[in-house]
Length: 110
Image (cartoon, rainbow, N blue to C red; front, side):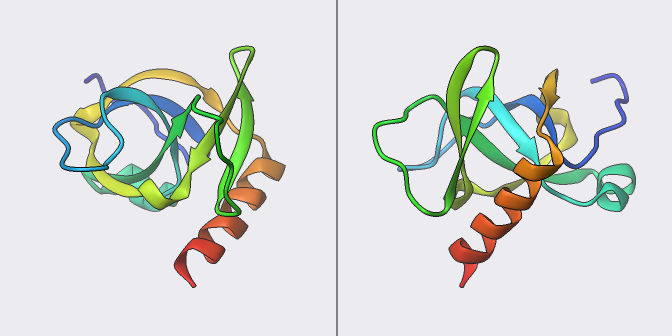
């Protein structure tokens, strides 16, 4: 990967495989949730996967509109990944979505 400046709230395609059990699989969009200091200096970043599976919506999930499609950020799948797993930049979430995401994470971690 060429060195990118990765920022909190950015959306990147991230290689999530290999996985085990019910962990969300394949290369998919993820929101970067780690702080910018960690993103700059650490080889690891914290991401939350995004899915287009909208069958059920839980209080710890956040709905976004990305590339003309409704999707959800699945906070129960939060994970640390090496920057080598980061692929294509896909955009970013807005400030209001980041606030909703932080609140959803609080609910998830209570």
